[in-house]
Image (spheres, one colour):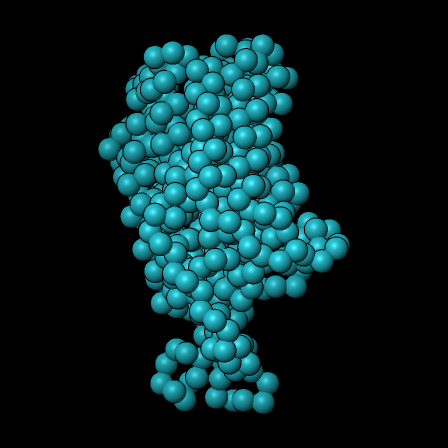
Length: 429
């Protein structure tokens, strides 16, 4: 009741205009692509620098682990300093990492460059948190949905573009071009984003912000549940995208990196199909969307497992998987920032720590399992990660269902929402 009164007396935030929403989506897409270019290039990179097949997942994993470090140390800065300058400087720093990769002469140089690019590519989450903080409550989910669609588009198109460019001019050209583009969009960010007009934070806030991942995980049930779901969600996601190039480059398909990269278009179709997830979350349907999407994610692996027999079924599996992952991801972010949008930087940064852990686990485990037992076993692993995410959601909903508000026998937490629901009022509240 108090929260509702406070929201009513506080001045409403202006609605985000369409051009800014699109600009933020583009900045996210270009930035996040830096850590995903390698996925269709693993065979070429391994051959060029003599990396064994079992170690190829390390290239993807180090980008994700670097991203994890950036989430803990850099994303909280978005709540404390001028976000426009922070966004521009982090994009430029990511360009330094991709330049190191482009000119790598040894495995060590390659892995250092990949890690640096991963650390500063967390600018994506600074942008998402920025959008969440400046959005009006009734459009926050929609804005997050559009902007994170830019993220997913960047992830997926990175694979398509990387495959095509590497076939034409080699894998190093992919990273050189990325560095140039990153420098250009850094200039766009610093000149076109609105000025940051927030007041200066109190001393010591940064230390508390860096510790948010521990605090939120131990004290906030919604955050904790969504974080664990995200870990398994992106382990499943990267199980497909980090491993798919391996069976497709072998018999019976022998596809080129360009052809493998084109599968990214199918993923883009699926991800963009889930743009409405943010709108559904704004309408109070986040939990039901999550449950349905996780079921779909599990089923998608039945199709993706057929990659060695049918490219058509694989394409359908890719579309379905990316739709499900994007829908869950958008609804999760909307739920965790709903009560504290002014702290969106540290909340989303902490949440994305679990994204990076899941992505790294998926990349490393899938390439290792494929090397040992083939694509069938790797698909079982990806499906198991999806099933684990669904299990976490089900357990959380079952535990939430019987919890009643003290002193009021008419109210309970409904298993399909995170709000108190009046049974006497005839349905969900």
